[in-house]
Length: 69
Image 1 (tube, rainbow, N blue to C red):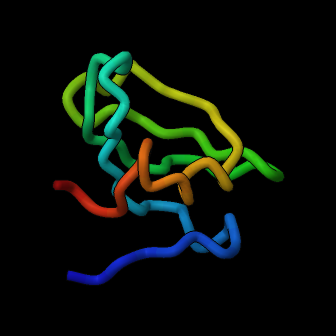
Image 2 (tube, rainbow, N blue to C red; image 1 turned 90 degrees about the horizontal axis):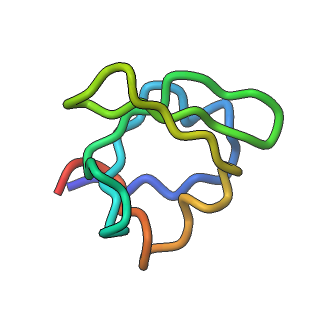
Image 3 (spheres, rainbow, N blue to C red; image 1 turned 30 degrees about the vertical axis):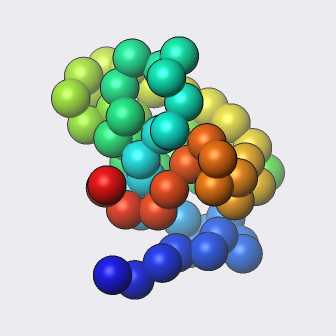
């Protein structure tokens, strides 16, 4: 399985992520927008649910895993 290590936000568009944070209602997310130092993630199960965060937070493996786990 390919591991995506985010080094630049422009390469994140369309990438898939799994949240390990139990406080989020959904665990599977897709990057739908990259603006400056932030990314907008959209839940796969609930398309109306989005999450905006700094793209560097995706490097925290205790909170996010690349791909869908």
